[in-house]
Amino acid sequence: MEQPTSEFKSKGGFKRILAASSYTVQGLAMAWRIEHAFRQEVLVFLLGLVFAWVLPVSGFQKLALIGVLLLVLIVELVNSAIEAIVDRISLEKHPLSKNAKDFGSAAVGLTMLLAAITWGTVLYNRFM
Image 1 (cartoon, rainbow, N blue to C red):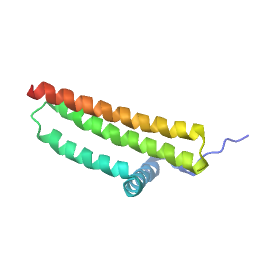
Image 2 (spheres, rainbow, N blue to C red; image 1 turned 120 degrees about the vertical axis):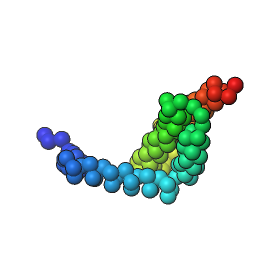
Image 3 (cartoon, rainbow, N blue to C red; image 1 turned 180 degrees about the horizontal axis):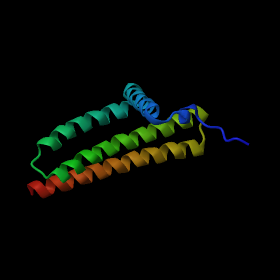
């Protein structure tokens, strides 16, 4: 029996790269349009990017400061994907659906905690 495959898997080489780039842009645009938390986190990311750029810290520390903020965006997108899948399956309240959404939210929260600890550590080491 042949395994069903996605139409997206049939592309190869440069066509695959172009298609993947298009899907990335579409995903980011949709997240910006419909996810309030994502918009807030993008604004924090942009402020953090500027602030990290001008801070008198090492290149590695700048990378860590920017990287953890980017990680928050990545985890938020994964959380949004989980929520969309759960809602696609059913809008009915179910304990497993609640768990999936809560786990995604917890992942975002822990990533924000990591970002806060990273920023706090770098700033403390630089200015204290």
